[in-house]
Structures are given as structure tokens and as C-alpha cells.
Amino acid sequence: MAAPLEGIRVVELASFVAAPACGALLADLGADVIKVEVPWGEIYRHSTPRMVGFESDFPASAPYQMENRGKRSLALDLALPQALEALHKVVDTADVMLTNMLPARLEKNGLDPETLRTARPELIVCRISGFGPDGPDANRPAFDYSTFWARTGIMDQLRDPEAPPAFQRPGFGDHSAAMAMALGVVSALRTRDADGQGQVIDVSLQHIGFYVNGNDVASSLAAGEQPPMHQRKQPRNPLWNHYRTAGDRWLFLVMIESDRYWPEFLRAIERSDLETDERFAGAVPRYQNSRELVEILDATFAQRTLEEWGERLNAHSVIWAPTRTILEATQDPAAREYGSFPTVDHPEFGSFETVAPPMRMSAHDMPATAPAPGLGAHTAEVLAEAGVDAETIALLVEASG
Image 1 (cartoon, rainbow, N blue to C red):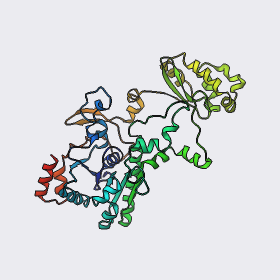
Image 2 (cartoon, rainbow, N blue to C red):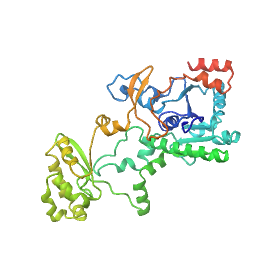
Image 3 (cartoon, rainbow, N blue to C red):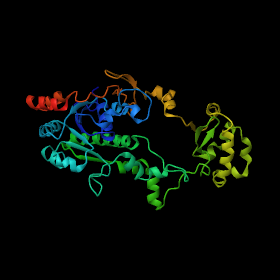
Image 4 (tube, helix red, strand yellow):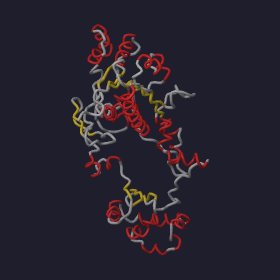
């Protein structure tokens, strides 16, 4: 069976994470994705683990490799008129243009949707931005840290009331935006098959933050109130809370229907005596007396290690999870069985594991093992395919070298 997007060409004019991650998903689905990059390489390409705080000597940017697997690299300095003209010819060969350039820069370079689609109505233009293409912040630079995390309320909400706001780890909003845009692309391709018309797809990192946190945001909109914060020492449901074990590790109880699990949970922790305690005789009394119950559970869980509690809790019908480090989590047998971490055999950097695409398809393999391209490795090839003359190709290859 042919790959879902076989024969589809995507020109990706983007850097960092959100749009390139979408491009990687489209490449996983079989599209020919041409990554346009500055001749010296975007910063993300050069961000090795040591540069962000690891002690590793791994010589490449592992996230860059993940976000750019399976693409072709076209290195162009758009300050050169010949490079910009050549880029337009490459875009003319595309089914999809994917970008996170700000609207003003797109318009300056004649790459705005109105200009491109006037000439080629069948083109699908995909824009990932901080705040959308219109409004007061349309041309404001943004990262998912600022726009998805801090400005949407997620940063403030994910903490105990007395704790400072939570710091986001890299790419949370970007990967969410990438999946949304990939869905938009395949949908637009489907409608273009029917009527021959492309369209413009916009994904805003700010709106992705509202969507990802949609349960809280929808409730807040309906109620006109700020959602309550989780308080670990006095939660609404002590069976939906995290507890410290011996050895300074944590576990997370996730028994949202607490009445259903209460008796079995007490057997698991060897505290069946609490079943007759009037303070904890139902979900409402447990909420009313949650501070007292958390104190009891804190003392109970502190008596055994995380490994010891794991054996006990797994022997009973309760819902829980160990709070693992990332390095521990990557060794999870379920994740390994699922195929979450395929191995890339890179011609320059050797073998290393990476993160698989977010879905699997029974009729189309997505191994995610293709390496990211070398900087400018396909410049001459892509320009020739677009009909750029040999003299200009030689000039631009030399300029990007």
C-alpha cells in the first residue's frame, strides 16, 4: 500500500519546534518535505545536550534530529535576491507550504498566502504562530513557553497555591500545535482532492494552550470563575493525589471515583480500620476531612519504598502510577513493547534512540528512523527540480557553503 501522503510535496520554511515537528509527521506519512534553512544552520540544529545542561558528549541536537527526520535540506540566504527568487520557484512545485515566519516577513518576501494563492489557488498554506495572523500581537515573536504556557494560565494553574508557577519543559505546546496542524493538512488535502482548491490553515500557540487545557478553560468560561488549584495537603479527593514514599520518591493515586475504590485501596495499604471511620465514610466526608486523611496517608506511604508500594498496589485493583524520572520512564516495558523509542542509524553521529510518532497505522509503517538531513545536503538537487538554472544553482550552493 502506498504511503498516505506519497506524491505530496511540502516546503517547510520554519525553525525550532512546532512547524518542523509538523513537517516530520508529514514526512512520516510519506510526504516529500523540503526544509528551508539558513546557510549557517538554525540554532536548534546546533543545540547539543551539553549546551542545555547535560554532561553528555553526544555531538548533535537530539531534538533537532527528531523534528527533522526524513526531510531534504535546502540552504538559502534569503538576503540574496537570487535565493528568494529560487525559493519562489521551489514553492511553486509544492502542494503545501508550512511556515512559522511572522506575517510581516512573509509579506515582505512575497510569501504571504494572498500572494501565493492568487497565483496558485490549489496551494495549501499552513501558518503556526504565537497569536494568529491578525490582531495586535500578530507580528510578535513567541515561544510556546511564553504564549502556550504562561499567557494561557497553564503556568499559574499547575502548582500548589503556596508554590511558585511551574516551569515548562521544552516543546509541550509546540508538539500539540504540530499535531493540530498535521490534522489540518491532511484534511485540506482531502478537500482539495474534491474541488481542486487549497486553503490557509492557521494554528495559534496561544489557542492550543486554551485547547489543551480545555477542561479548565471551558469550566471557567461557563462559571465565570477562576478554577480552583489542587492542594496536595487538602485535596478535594485524597485518592486523587500524590504522596511521598520512603527514599524520597513519589507515587500518584488516580482514583477519581473514590467510593468505588475506597475499600480495595484500604486493603492495599493495610488500613482496613479506616473503612469504619466516620470521617472517611464517603466521598463527601473524605473531602470535608481531607487534611486529616492526607496526614494519615502521608504517614502510611512514608513507611515503604516506592518499589515496595508498587508490589502492593499492583496486587490490588487500584489506579496509581509511580512518579518516575524521564530516564526511568524510557525503560518502561510497556513503552518498549509499544515501540516508543526507535533507533536511528545516523551516518555521522552513529546509533541513538529517538521518540516515535504519536500514532501507529496498521497499513503504513512509520519507523521514524530516518536521520535529519545534513545542512544544505539537497540544495542543488531541489533547485534543479524547481527549474533553477545551473549558474544560479552554483551561486547559491557556493553562498550556502
